[in-house]
Length: 147
Image 1 (tube, one colour):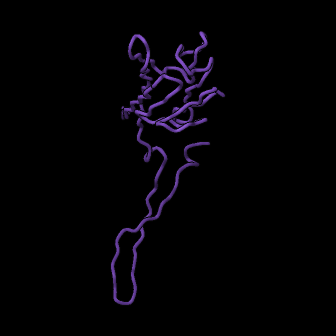
Image 2 (tube, rainbow, N blue to C red):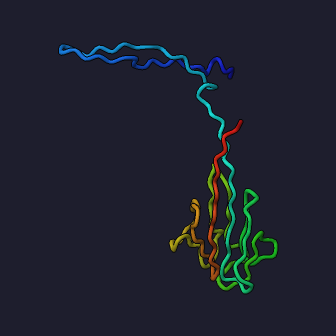
């Protein structure tokens, strides 16, 4: 669709004067275009998992793919050989500007902040529990104005 078709004309109050009998409003017309309203702001997003409860101590895992799987199986993106974790236990994926965790039919379930979930939007510092693993979801969003 051409940008000219997206232009809008907006009428707004210019001055307001009050009289005892009635209000009078003088109107002016302002021509707005999509280009004049848009400010180019990009959002840089970084997310990672901090995995606690591992033998070697905490470990970090960057979420640099649209989807990762967690479980005991060797082909999972995050392999967790701990008690109570299914072969392919859960997945974390990015959709519509949000990260989600989804249980994949595990035996012991997936918990976010102590609540059992099937699918849940993740927010910064949410605590995910699968089996004996404790995972902290960390997300950093930085707004940058484009030049």
